Image (cartoon, rainbow, N blue to C red; front, top):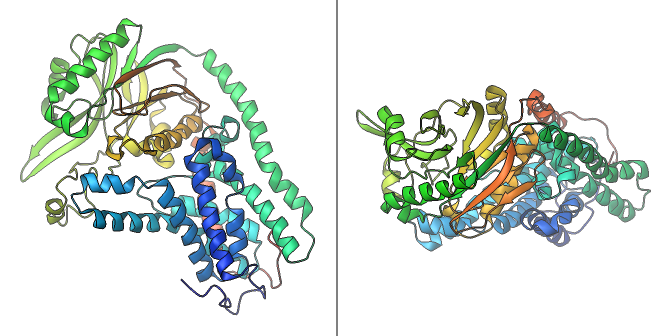
Amino acid sequence: MPDLDAAPDADAPALAPAVAPRTAVALAVGSGLLYWWGFSFGALWPCSLVALAPLLVAVRGRGPAAAAALGAVTGLVLDLGGFYWLLGMLRTFSGFPTPVCALFTVLLCAYQGGRIAMLTGLTARATRRGWPAGLAFALAFAASELLWPLLFPWYFGACVHGVPALAQVADLGGPYLVSLVLVAPSLALAELWLARRERRPAEARWVAAALAVPALAALYGAVRIRQVDAAVQAAPSVKVGLVQGDMPLVQRRGDRAESLRRHRTMTAELRDRGAELVVWSEAAVTIDLPEADYQKMSERIVTRDLRVATVFGAVLTRRAPGAFVAYNTALSADAGGKVRGRYDKEFLLAFGEYLPFGEQLPVLYDWSPNSGHLTAGTRNDPIDVDGHRVTAFICYEDILPSFVNAAVRHGQPEMLVNLTNDAWFGDTTEPWIHLALAKFRAIEHRRYLLRATNSGVSAVVDPVGRVVAHGGTFRPETVEATAHWLSPTRTGYELWGDTPWWLASAAVVAMGFLSRRRGRPPLRS
Protein backbone atom coordinates (compact mmCIF):
# COMPACT_ATOMS: atom_id res chain seq x y z
CA MET A 1 0.00 0.00 0.00
CA PRO A 2 1.29 3.52 -0.75
CA ASP A 3 2.47 5.66 2.13
CA LEU A 4 -0.76 7.15 3.40
CA ASP A 5 1.16 10.08 4.90
CA ALA A 6 2.99 10.85 1.66
CA ALA A 7 2.48 14.40 0.53
CA PRO A 8 0.42 14.86 -2.63
CA ASP A 9 2.13 16.42 -5.66
CA ALA A 10 2.86 20.07 -6.10
CA ASP A 11 -0.55 20.85 -7.58
CA ALA A 12 -2.36 19.76 -4.42
CA PRO A 13 -3.82 22.23 -1.92
CA ALA A 14 -1.96 22.38 1.37
CA LEU A 15 -4.35 20.16 3.29
CA ALA A 16 -3.15 17.69 5.90
CA PRO A 17 -4.80 14.25 6.11
CA ALA A 18 -7.79 14.32 8.43
CA VAL A 19 -6.80 11.10 10.26
CA ALA A 20 -3.72 8.99 10.85
CA PRO A 21 -2.92 6.10 8.45
CA ARG A 22 -4.13 3.32 10.74
CA THR A 23 -7.34 5.18 11.45
CA ALA A 24 -7.81 5.74 7.71
CA VAL A 25 -7.51 2.01 7.01
CA ALA A 26 -9.97 1.23 9.82
CA LEU A 27 -12.43 3.75 8.39
CA ALA A 28 -12.04 2.22 4.91
CA VAL A 29 -12.79 -1.21 6.36
CA GLY A 30 -15.80 0.27 8.16
CA SER A 31 -17.18 1.68 4.92
CA GLY A 32 -16.77 -1.72 3.28
CA LEU A 33 -18.70 -3.40 6.07
CA LEU A 34 -21.52 -0.83 6.05
CA TYR A 35 -21.80 -1.03 2.26
CA TRP A 36 -21.93 -4.86 2.42
CA TRP A 37 -24.51 -4.88 5.22
CA GLY A 38 -26.72 -2.36 3.47
CA PHE A 39 -26.51 -4.27 0.19
CA SER A 40 -26.78 -7.89 1.31
CA PHE A 41 -29.18 -7.68 4.26
CA GLY A 42 -32.49 -6.01 3.45
CA ALA A 43 -33.34 -4.95 7.01
CA LEU A 44 -30.00 -3.15 7.30
CA TRP A 45 -30.55 -0.91 4.25
CA PRO A 46 -30.18 2.28 6.38
CA CYS A 47 -26.47 1.42 6.60
CA SER A 48 -26.25 2.57 2.99
CA LEU A 49 -27.15 6.12 4.00
CA VAL A 50 -23.96 6.44 6.07
CA ALA A 51 -21.74 3.79 4.47
CA LEU A 52 -19.47 6.15 2.56
CA ALA A 53 -18.94 8.77 5.26
CA PRO A 54 -16.02 6.90 6.90
CA LEU A 55 -14.29 6.52 3.53
CA LEU A 56 -14.72 10.22 2.78
CA VAL A 57 -13.01 11.07 6.06
CA ALA A 58 -10.26 8.52 5.42
CA VAL A 59 -9.26 9.95 2.04
CA ARG A 60 -9.51 13.59 3.10
CA GLY A 61 -6.21 15.36 2.34
CA ARG A 62 -4.55 12.37 0.68
CA GLY A 63 -3.13 12.11 -2.80
CA PRO A 64 -4.64 9.95 -5.57
CA ALA A 65 -2.46 6.88 -4.95
CA ALA A 66 -3.16 6.77 -1.22
CA ALA A 67 -6.85 7.53 -1.75
CA ALA A 68 -7.13 4.78 -4.36
CA ALA A 69 -5.45 2.33 -1.98
CA LEU A 70 -7.99 3.12 0.74
CA GLY A 71 -10.80 2.73 -1.79
CA ALA A 72 -9.36 -0.65 -2.75
CA VAL A 73 -9.55 -1.72 0.91
CA THR A 74 -13.23 -0.73 1.06
CA GLY A 75 -13.91 -2.52 -2.23
CA LEU A 76 -12.19 -5.73 -1.19
CA VAL A 77 -14.05 -5.88 2.13
CA LEU A 78 -17.49 -5.31 0.61
CA ASP A 79 -16.81 -7.77 -2.22
CA LEU A 80 -15.54 -10.55 0.03
CA GLY A 81 -18.69 -10.17 2.12
CA GLY A 82 -21.16 -9.85 -0.71
CA PHE A 83 -19.59 -12.39 -3.06
CA TYR A 84 -18.40 -15.09 -0.66
CA TRP A 85 -20.38 -17.64 -2.70
CA LEU A 86 -17.86 -17.37 -5.55
CA LEU A 87 -15.60 -19.78 -3.70
CA GLY A 88 -18.22 -22.53 -3.65
CA MET A 89 -19.11 -21.97 -7.29
CA LEU A 90 -15.51 -22.16 -8.46
CA ARG A 91 -14.77 -25.17 -6.28
CA THR A 92 -17.76 -27.06 -7.68
CA PHE A 93 -17.60 -26.19 -11.34
CA SER A 94 -14.11 -25.03 -12.31
CA GLY A 95 -12.33 -28.30 -11.63
CA PHE A 96 -9.54 -26.44 -9.81
CA PRO A 97 -8.38 -27.38 -6.26
CA THR A 98 -9.75 -25.39 -3.31
CA PRO A 99 -6.59 -23.27 -2.69
CA VAL A 100 -6.60 -22.17 -6.33
CA CYS A 101 -10.33 -21.38 -6.12
CA ALA A 102 -9.74 -19.36 -2.96
CA LEU A 103 -6.99 -17.40 -4.70
CA PHE A 104 -9.23 -16.74 -7.71
CA THR A 105 -12.02 -15.59 -5.36
CA VAL A 106 -9.78 -13.09 -3.60
CA LEU A 107 -8.32 -11.84 -6.89
CA LEU A 108 -11.76 -11.46 -8.43
CA CYS A 109 -13.08 -9.62 -5.37
CA ALA A 110 -10.01 -7.38 -5.38
CA TYR A 111 -10.56 -6.62 -9.05
CA GLN A 112 -14.25 -5.86 -8.58
CA GLY A 113 -13.38 -3.77 -5.54
CA GLY A 114 -11.25 -1.69 -7.87
CA ARG A 115 -14.45 0.19 -8.65
CA ILE A 116 -14.15 1.93 -5.26
CA ALA A 117 -10.43 2.56 -5.83
CA MET A 118 -11.38 4.29 -9.06
CA LEU A 119 -13.94 6.38 -7.16
CA THR A 120 -11.51 7.63 -4.51
CA GLY A 121 -8.62 8.04 -6.92
CA LEU A 122 -10.66 10.25 -9.26
CA THR A 123 -11.99 12.23 -6.30
CA ALA A 124 -8.49 12.88 -4.97
CA ARG A 125 -7.23 14.02 -8.38
CA ALA A 126 -10.09 16.47 -8.79
CA THR A 127 -9.84 17.75 -5.21
CA ARG A 128 -6.12 18.46 -5.42
CA ARG A 129 -6.89 20.64 -8.45
CA GLY A 130 -9.19 22.76 -6.31
CA TRP A 131 -12.56 21.32 -7.39
CA PRO A 132 -15.32 20.82 -4.79
CA ALA A 133 -14.70 17.49 -3.08
CA GLY A 134 -18.40 16.70 -2.67
CA LEU A 135 -19.12 17.37 -6.34
CA ALA A 136 -16.04 15.40 -7.40
CA PHE A 137 -17.06 12.45 -5.23
CA ALA A 138 -20.61 12.38 -6.64
CA LEU A 139 -19.42 12.57 -10.25
CA ALA A 140 -16.70 9.98 -9.61
CA PHE A 141 -19.24 7.67 -8.01
CA ALA A 142 -21.40 7.77 -11.14
CA ALA A 143 -18.32 7.24 -13.31
CA SER A 144 -17.13 4.26 -11.27
CA GLU A 145 -20.51 2.52 -11.50
CA LEU A 146 -20.77 3.19 -15.23
CA LEU A 147 -17.21 2.53 -16.39
CA TRP A 148 -15.62 -0.12 -14.21
CA PRO A 149 -16.19 -3.51 -15.94
CA LEU A 150 -17.50 -6.20 -13.58
CA LEU A 151 -17.98 -9.93 -13.99
CA PHE A 152 -20.99 -9.72 -11.64
CA PRO A 153 -22.46 -6.22 -12.04
CA TRP A 154 -24.08 -4.53 -9.06
CA TYR A 155 -25.09 -1.00 -8.08
CA PHE A 156 -25.10 0.79 -4.74
CA GLY A 157 -28.71 1.84 -5.31
CA ALA A 158 -29.79 -1.79 -4.97
CA CYS A 159 -29.46 -1.35 -1.20
CA VAL A 160 -32.98 0.12 -1.26
CA HIS A 161 -34.58 -2.51 -3.47
CA GLY A 162 -37.00 -3.17 -0.61
CA VAL A 163 -37.84 0.52 -0.12
CA PRO A 164 -39.94 1.37 -3.20
CA ALA A 165 -40.30 5.06 -2.34
CA LEU A 166 -36.53 5.61 -2.61
CA ALA A 167 -36.14 3.48 -5.74
CA GLN A 168 -38.59 5.26 -8.06
CA VAL A 169 -36.05 7.78 -9.36
CA ALA A 170 -34.65 4.86 -11.36
CA ASP A 171 -37.18 5.73 -14.08
CA LEU A 172 -35.27 9.00 -14.51
CA GLY A 173 -31.65 7.91 -14.25
CA GLY A 174 -31.46 4.17 -13.81
CA PRO A 175 -29.66 2.63 -10.81
CA TYR A 176 -27.00 5.34 -10.97
CA LEU A 177 -29.41 8.06 -9.83
CA VAL A 178 -30.66 5.87 -6.98
CA SER A 179 -27.03 5.36 -5.94
CA LEU A 180 -26.43 9.11 -5.82
CA VAL A 181 -29.52 9.57 -3.65
CA LEU A 182 -27.86 7.26 -1.13
CA VAL A 183 -24.47 8.97 -1.47
CA ALA A 184 -25.81 12.40 -0.46
CA PRO A 185 -26.29 11.75 3.30
CA SER A 186 -22.74 10.38 3.58
CA LEU A 187 -21.40 13.57 2.00
CA ALA A 188 -23.33 15.65 4.53
CA LEU A 189 -22.23 13.60 7.54
CA ALA A 190 -18.60 13.65 6.45
CA GLU A 191 -18.75 17.44 6.06
CA LEU A 192 -20.12 17.83 9.58
CA TRP A 193 -17.38 15.65 11.07
CA LEU A 194 -14.58 17.26 9.06
CA ALA A 195 -15.77 20.77 9.90
CA ARG A 196 -15.51 19.93 13.57
CA ARG A 197 -12.14 18.24 13.07
CA GLU A 198 -10.76 21.16 11.10
CA ARG A 199 -12.31 23.72 13.48
CA ARG A 200 -14.28 25.57 10.87
CA PRO A 201 -18.00 26.21 10.42
CA ALA A 202 -19.86 23.53 8.54
CA GLU A 203 -21.60 24.59 5.36
CA ALA A 204 -25.07 24.41 6.89
CA ARG A 205 -27.08 25.12 3.74
CA TRP A 206 -25.13 22.58 1.72
CA VAL A 207 -25.44 19.96 4.49
CA ALA A 208 -29.18 20.56 4.73
CA ALA A 209 -29.55 20.22 0.96
CA ALA A 210 -27.60 16.94 0.91
CA LEU A 211 -29.65 15.51 3.78
CA ALA A 212 -32.85 16.54 1.98
CA VAL A 213 -32.02 14.51 -1.14
CA PRO A 214 -33.46 11.19 0.15
CA ALA A 215 -36.59 13.00 1.37
CA LEU A 216 -37.12 14.58 -2.04
CA ALA A 217 -36.55 11.22 -3.72
CA ALA A 218 -39.10 9.62 -1.40
CA LEU A 219 -41.61 12.36 -2.22
CA TYR A 220 -41.10 11.77 -5.93
CA GLY A 221 -41.47 8.05 -5.29
CA ALA A 222 -44.76 8.45 -3.47
CA VAL A 223 -46.22 10.46 -6.36
CA ARG A 224 -44.95 8.06 -9.03
CA ILE A 225 -46.18 4.98 -7.18
CA ARG A 226 -49.72 6.37 -7.13
CA GLN A 227 -49.53 7.27 -10.82
CA VAL A 228 -48.15 3.91 -11.91
CA ASP A 229 -50.60 1.96 -9.76
CA ALA A 230 -53.48 3.82 -11.42
CA ALA A 231 -52.12 3.00 -14.89
CA VAL A 232 -51.75 -0.67 -13.95
CA GLN A 233 -55.33 -0.95 -12.77
CA ALA A 234 -56.55 0.44 -16.11
CA ALA A 235 -54.47 -2.03 -18.16
CA PRO A 236 -55.55 -5.51 -19.37
CA SER A 237 -54.72 -8.23 -16.83
CA VAL A 238 -53.30 -11.71 -17.33
CA LYS A 239 -52.96 -14.55 -14.84
CA VAL A 240 -49.37 -15.74 -14.90
CA GLY A 241 -47.62 -18.77 -13.48
CA LEU A 242 -43.94 -19.52 -12.98
CA VAL A 243 -42.53 -23.04 -12.88
CA GLN A 244 -39.55 -23.59 -10.60
CA GLY A 245 -38.46 -27.13 -11.42
CA ASP A 246 -35.49 -27.32 -9.01
CA MET A 247 -33.61 -29.76 -11.21
CA PRO A 248 -30.07 -30.39 -9.88
CA LEU A 249 -27.46 -29.22 -12.33
CA VAL A 250 -26.06 -32.71 -12.85
CA GLN A 251 -29.41 -34.53 -12.85
CA ARG A 252 -31.06 -32.07 -15.24
CA ARG A 253 -28.57 -33.10 -17.91
CA GLY A 254 -28.46 -36.75 -16.95
CA ASP A 255 -32.22 -37.30 -16.64
CA ARG A 256 -33.57 -35.22 -19.49
CA ALA A 257 -37.00 -36.84 -19.46
CA GLU A 258 -37.57 -35.99 -15.77
CA SER A 259 -37.02 -32.28 -16.31
CA LEU A 260 -39.54 -32.18 -19.16
CA ARG A 261 -42.04 -34.32 -17.24
CA ARG A 262 -41.80 -32.12 -14.16
CA HIS A 263 -42.27 -28.88 -16.07
CA ARG A 264 -45.18 -30.20 -18.11
CA THR A 265 -46.94 -31.54 -14.99
CA MET A 266 -46.52 -28.29 -13.06
CA THR A 267 -47.66 -26.30 -16.09
CA ALA A 268 -50.84 -28.38 -16.33
CA GLU A 269 -51.54 -27.65 -12.66
CA LEU A 270 -51.11 -23.93 -13.23
CA ARG A 271 -53.34 -24.03 -16.31
CA ASP A 272 -56.06 -25.84 -14.40
CA ARG A 273 -55.94 -23.08 -11.76
CA GLY A 274 -56.49 -20.43 -14.41
CA ALA A 275 -53.02 -19.43 -15.59
CA GLU A 276 -53.02 -17.82 -19.04
CA LEU A 277 -49.24 -17.49 -19.38
CA VAL A 278 -46.66 -19.86 -17.90
CA VAL A 279 -42.92 -19.23 -17.81
CA TRP A 280 -40.24 -21.91 -17.35
CA SER A 281 -36.65 -21.32 -16.33
CA GLU A 282 -33.45 -21.11 -18.31
CA ALA A 283 -32.65 -24.34 -20.22
CA ALA A 284 -35.63 -26.10 -18.63
CA VAL A 285 -35.80 -28.27 -21.77
CA THR A 286 -32.64 -30.32 -21.40
CA ILE A 287 -33.01 -32.16 -24.69
CA ASP A 288 -30.88 -30.22 -27.15
CA LEU A 289 -33.02 -29.00 -30.05
CA PRO A 290 -31.49 -28.88 -33.55
CA GLU A 291 -31.62 -25.30 -34.79
CA ALA A 292 -32.76 -26.38 -38.25
CA ASP A 293 -35.93 -27.99 -36.88
CA TYR A 294 -36.40 -26.49 -33.43
CA GLN A 295 -39.98 -25.32 -33.99
CA LYS A 296 -41.40 -28.68 -35.05
CA MET A 297 -39.38 -30.58 -32.45
CA SER A 298 -40.47 -28.18 -29.68
CA GLU A 299 -44.09 -28.52 -30.68
CA ARG A 300 -43.79 -32.31 -30.71
CA ILE A 301 -42.00 -32.91 -27.39
CA VAL A 302 -42.50 -29.73 -25.34
CA THR A 303 -45.63 -27.71 -26.03
CA ARG A 304 -48.01 -30.43 -27.22
CA ASP A 305 -51.19 -30.55 -25.11
CA LEU A 306 -50.04 -27.76 -22.76
CA ARG A 307 -53.00 -25.64 -23.89
CA VAL A 308 -51.57 -22.46 -22.39
CA ALA A 309 -49.19 -19.81 -23.69
CA THR A 310 -45.68 -20.73 -22.55
CA VAL A 311 -42.20 -19.22 -22.51
CA PHE A 312 -39.47 -21.79 -21.92
CA GLY A 313 -35.70 -22.08 -21.94
CA ALA A 314 -33.92 -24.50 -24.26
CA VAL A 315 -30.57 -25.09 -25.96
CA LEU A 316 -30.48 -24.95 -29.76
CA THR A 317 -27.58 -26.65 -31.48
CA ARG A 318 -26.05 -26.59 -34.92
CA ARG A 319 -23.17 -28.59 -36.32
CA ALA A 320 -20.95 -26.45 -38.51
CA PRO A 321 -17.79 -27.47 -40.36
CA GLY A 322 -15.20 -28.04 -37.68
CA ALA A 323 -17.41 -26.60 -34.93
CA PHE A 324 -20.39 -27.31 -32.68
CA VAL A 325 -22.57 -24.25 -32.07
CA ALA A 326 -25.01 -24.02 -29.15
CA TYR A 327 -27.35 -21.18 -28.14
CA ASN A 328 -28.94 -20.53 -24.76
CA THR A 329 -32.45 -19.72 -25.97
CA ALA A 330 -35.88 -18.56 -24.83
CA LEU A 331 -38.80 -19.78 -26.95
CA SER A 332 -42.45 -18.76 -26.80
CA ALA A 333 -45.47 -20.85 -27.81
CA ASP A 334 -49.14 -19.97 -28.00
CA ALA A 335 -51.98 -21.84 -26.33
CA GLY A 336 -52.20 -24.10 -29.37
CA GLY A 337 -48.60 -25.20 -28.92
CA LYS A 338 -47.17 -23.38 -31.94
CA VAL A 339 -43.75 -21.81 -31.39
CA ARG A 340 -43.98 -18.10 -32.15
CA GLY A 341 -40.80 -16.46 -30.87
CA ARG A 342 -37.11 -17.03 -30.25
CA TYR A 343 -34.44 -15.10 -28.37
CA ASP A 344 -30.80 -16.21 -28.05
CA LYS A 345 -28.88 -15.00 -25.03
CA GLU A 346 -26.41 -12.26 -25.95
CA PHE A 347 -24.39 -11.73 -22.75
CA LEU A 348 -22.79 -15.02 -21.76
CA LEU A 349 -21.51 -15.64 -18.24
CA ALA A 350 -17.76 -16.04 -18.09
CA PHE A 351 -16.63 -19.46 -16.83
CA GLY A 352 -20.21 -20.73 -16.61
CA GLU A 353 -21.09 -20.43 -20.32
CA TYR A 354 -17.75 -19.67 -21.92
CA LEU A 355 -14.11 -19.25 -20.99
CA PRO A 356 -12.45 -15.89 -21.64
CA PHE A 357 -9.97 -16.40 -24.50
CA GLY A 358 -11.23 -19.95 -24.89
CA GLU A 359 -11.74 -19.53 -28.64
CA GLN A 360 -8.18 -18.32 -29.05
CA LEU A 361 -6.74 -20.91 -26.63
CA PRO A 362 -8.89 -24.08 -26.82
CA VAL A 363 -6.64 -25.78 -24.29
CA LEU A 364 -8.40 -23.69 -21.60
CA TYR A 365 -11.50 -25.85 -22.05
CA ASP A 366 -9.36 -28.93 -21.38
CA TRP A 367 -8.14 -27.36 -18.15
CA SER A 368 -11.67 -26.38 -17.08
CA PRO A 369 -13.89 -29.19 -18.42
CA ASN A 370 -17.01 -28.08 -16.49
CA SER A 371 -17.17 -24.67 -18.16
CA GLY A 372 -19.80 -24.12 -20.83
CA HIS A 373 -19.06 -23.48 -24.50
CA LEU A 374 -21.99 -21.48 -25.86
CA THR A 375 -22.36 -18.98 -28.69
CA ALA A 376 -23.82 -15.51 -28.10
CA GLY A 377 -26.94 -14.33 -29.90
CA THR A 378 -26.97 -11.17 -31.99
CA ARG A 379 -30.57 -9.86 -31.90
CA ASN A 380 -32.76 -8.58 -29.06
CA ASP A 381 -36.12 -8.67 -30.83
CA PRO A 382 -39.18 -9.24 -28.61
CA ILE A 383 -40.93 -12.59 -28.66
CA ASP A 384 -44.63 -13.04 -29.37
CA VAL A 385 -46.92 -14.23 -26.58
CA ASP A 386 -50.52 -14.53 -27.84
CA GLY A 387 -50.15 -11.34 -29.84
CA HIS A 388 -48.34 -9.40 -27.11
CA ARG A 389 -44.74 -8.22 -27.38
CA VAL A 390 -42.54 -9.59 -24.59
CA THR A 391 -38.83 -8.88 -24.21
CA ALA A 392 -36.96 -11.84 -22.75
CA PHE A 393 -33.66 -11.89 -20.91
CA ILE A 394 -31.69 -14.93 -19.86
CA CYS A 395 -29.69 -15.31 -16.66
CA TYR A 396 -27.82 -12.19 -15.58
CA GLU A 397 -28.88 -10.08 -18.57
CA ASP A 398 -31.63 -8.73 -16.32
CA ILE A 399 -29.05 -6.93 -14.15
CA LEU A 400 -27.52 -5.02 -17.08
CA PRO A 401 -29.44 -1.71 -17.18
CA SER A 402 -27.92 -0.41 -20.43
CA PHE A 403 -28.55 -3.69 -22.26
CA VAL A 404 -32.13 -3.92 -21.03
CA ASN A 405 -32.70 -0.26 -21.89
CA ALA A 406 -31.56 -0.85 -25.48
CA ALA A 407 -33.75 -3.95 -25.81
CA VAL A 408 -36.83 -2.17 -24.47
CA ARG A 409 -36.26 0.87 -26.68
CA HIS A 410 -35.95 -1.47 -29.65
CA GLY A 411 -38.82 -3.83 -28.91
CA GLN A 412 -41.31 -1.62 -27.04
CA PRO A 413 -42.62 -4.67 -25.11
CA GLU A 414 -45.70 -4.91 -22.94
CA MET A 415 -43.94 -7.11 -20.39
CA LEU A 416 -40.44 -8.27 -19.39
CA VAL A 417 -39.51 -11.91 -18.77
CA ASN A 418 -36.34 -13.35 -17.30
CA LEU A 419 -35.34 -17.02 -17.43
CA THR A 420 -32.59 -17.87 -14.96
CA ASN A 421 -30.74 -20.76 -13.35
CA ASP A 422 -28.88 -19.68 -10.20
CA ALA A 423 -28.30 -23.24 -8.97
CA TRP A 424 -24.63 -22.72 -9.83
CA PHE A 425 -24.23 -20.62 -6.69
CA GLY A 426 -25.90 -22.93 -4.17
CA ASP A 427 -28.34 -22.00 -1.44
CA THR A 428 -26.57 -18.73 -0.66
CA THR A 429 -27.50 -15.06 -0.77
CA GLU A 430 -26.76 -14.90 -4.52
CA PRO A 431 -30.30 -15.76 -5.75
CA TRP A 432 -31.77 -13.07 -3.50
CA ILE A 433 -29.15 -10.53 -4.59
CA HIS A 434 -29.92 -11.36 -8.22
CA LEU A 435 -33.62 -10.69 -7.63
CA ALA A 436 -32.85 -7.44 -5.80
CA LEU A 437 -30.79 -6.16 -8.72
CA ALA A 438 -33.32 -7.27 -11.34
CA LYS A 439 -36.23 -5.46 -9.68
CA PHE A 440 -34.91 -2.12 -10.91
CA ARG A 441 -35.56 -3.07 -14.56
CA ALA A 442 -39.29 -3.10 -13.78
CA ILE A 443 -39.06 0.41 -12.31
CA GLU A 444 -36.87 1.81 -15.07
CA HIS A 445 -39.33 0.71 -17.77
CA ARG A 446 -42.64 0.58 -15.86
CA ARG A 447 -43.38 -2.98 -16.97
CA TYR A 448 -44.10 -6.18 -15.08
CA LEU A 449 -41.08 -8.46 -14.76
CA LEU A 450 -41.64 -12.22 -14.58
CA ARG A 451 -38.62 -14.18 -13.32
CA ALA A 452 -38.71 -17.97 -13.59
CA THR A 453 -35.64 -19.62 -12.09
CA ASN A 454 -34.67 -23.26 -11.82
CA SER A 455 -33.88 -23.22 -8.10
CA GLY A 456 -35.18 -19.81 -6.99
CA VAL A 457 -35.92 -17.07 -6.47
CA SER A 458 -38.87 -17.11 -8.92
CA ALA A 459 -40.89 -13.91 -8.63
CA VAL A 460 -43.38 -11.53 -10.20
CA VAL A 461 -42.29 -7.89 -9.87
CA ASP A 462 -44.71 -5.04 -10.52
CA PRO A 463 -43.81 -1.76 -12.31
CA VAL A 464 -42.85 0.02 -9.08
CA GLY A 465 -40.47 -2.75 -8.03
CA ARG A 466 -42.68 -4.55 -5.51
CA VAL A 467 -42.52 -8.33 -5.44
CA VAL A 468 -46.17 -9.35 -5.66
CA ALA A 469 -45.43 -13.08 -5.50
CA HIS A 470 -42.31 -15.18 -5.07
CA GLY A 471 -41.14 -18.65 -4.18
CA GLY A 472 -38.29 -19.96 -2.06
CA THR A 473 -35.02 -21.58 -2.99
CA PHE A 474 -34.07 -25.15 -3.86
CA ARG A 475 -37.52 -26.67 -3.86
CA PRO A 476 -39.90 -27.47 -6.74
CA GLU A 477 -42.83 -25.08 -6.68
CA THR A 478 -45.02 -22.80 -8.73
CA VAL A 479 -45.68 -19.09 -8.33
CA GLU A 480 -48.97 -17.48 -9.37
CA ALA A 481 -50.01 -13.83 -9.69
CA THR A 482 -51.99 -11.38 -11.73
CA ALA A 483 -49.92 -9.18 -14.03
CA HIS A 484 -50.92 -6.55 -16.58
CA TRP A 485 -50.04 -5.86 -20.20
CA LEU A 486 -48.78 -2.28 -20.19
CA SER A 487 -48.76 -0.14 -23.31
CA PRO A 488 -45.27 1.11 -24.15
CA THR A 489 -44.55 4.54 -22.70
CA ARG A 490 -41.12 6.10 -22.70
CA THR A 491 -39.62 6.75 -19.28
CA GLY A 492 -36.94 9.36 -18.79
CA TYR A 493 -34.28 6.66 -18.52
CA GLU A 494 -35.41 5.17 -21.82
CA LEU A 495 -35.20 8.57 -23.52
CA TRP A 496 -31.75 9.65 -22.44
CA GLY A 497 -30.29 6.40 -21.13
CA ASP A 498 -26.79 6.71 -19.68
CA THR A 499 -25.94 9.97 -21.45
CA PRO A 500 -25.96 12.03 -18.20
CA TRP A 501 -23.58 9.55 -16.59
CA TRP A 502 -21.21 9.58 -19.55
CA LEU A 503 -21.13 13.37 -19.25
CA ALA A 504 -20.51 13.08 -15.51
CA SER A 505 -17.64 10.67 -16.19
CA ALA A 506 -16.09 13.02 -18.73
CA ALA A 507 -16.45 15.92 -16.30
CA VAL A 508 -14.71 14.22 -13.38
CA VAL A 509 -11.86 13.02 -15.59
CA ALA A 510 -11.40 16.57 -16.88
CA MET A 511 -11.43 17.87 -13.31
CA GLY A 512 -8.43 15.68 -12.60
CA PHE A 513 -6.37 17.60 -15.14
CA LEU A 514 -7.76 21.14 -15.08
CA SER A 515 -7.04 23.28 -12.02
CA ARG A 516 -9.85 25.42 -10.59
CA ARG A 517 -8.18 27.36 -7.81
CA ARG A 518 -5.75 27.02 -4.95
CA GLY A 519 -6.65 26.93 -1.32
CA ARG A 520 -7.87 24.78 1.46
CA PRO A 521 -11.34 23.61 0.42
CA PRO A 522 -13.92 22.27 2.83
CA LEU A 523 -15.61 19.06 1.72
CA ARG A 524 -18.30 20.82 -0.24
CA SER A 525 -16.14 23.53 -1.85
